[in-house]
Image (cartoon, rainbow, N blue to C red; front, side, top):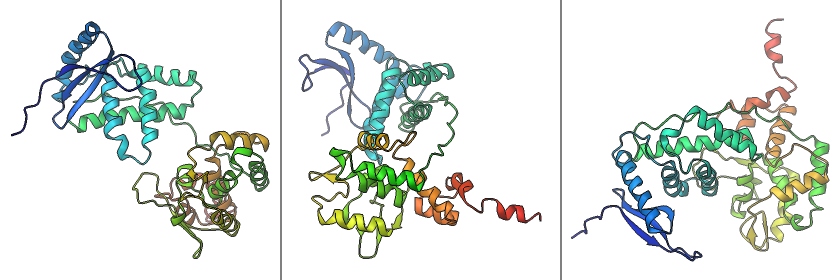
Length: 344
């Protein structure tokens, strides 16, 4: 006989590393038991928040008016339930963390164009790019619609988004790339893996996550191809690409001394981050406005400059269609030439 689920209640919970217990609201959401922290160690304050939670929860769980639902609950549910199912859970957790810092104490009814604008301003003041703020607000919208899908919110508010920034057109010339590759060997702590990571990104057009997640079973040195697909289905499609001769030589040297399954590794472990070491190499090379993603732009631009067909470039980069690839089209020596000839 199944046990009848108890109603919402306050429960003191002492987490590892904390000296005092914090009261959480334990409740059944129809599928499993959940905890929503009050952030209070004193029963009086926790009880006050619990009463407020009960007042707002009724509309939230019935799928009715969402204006009184606490945004923090929506975001944390999204992070716990949806995050682990995505291709990059750490990215989702970081977005949720950034959003909670601003929206945590607000209700869904507080989401307006003005407050979304305030959020963007707060991120710009924290030295974050407009594109970063926009992506985080897209995450807020996704969390609201996730709650609606689960029947916890009705009529989620519209999340205003700032205009998307223009795409970056920075790419490296052959001379700049050579200088960067040479200087990457001067960064002492990363000289064993950074040059190979740079070559992989530029010669294959792969994104940072695909480069760092690449494992040796995905590298076929006999047939000369790299399969960046790792079995996950994501919006960021990955391709199977041939290995250029220069990269082939670098991969063979790296494989002869490999100490783990990851291609980009150190001390028997895969590398998780490249930002600091890559930034150091860029400074040594005298390059500005360059990120690791610039190497992907460089790959596409070099192919267009060499006259490679746009559809082939799209396949090489793993684009689902040609629309994204066309942003590099003006680098092609025959750009719009055929259209001009039609009038002559």
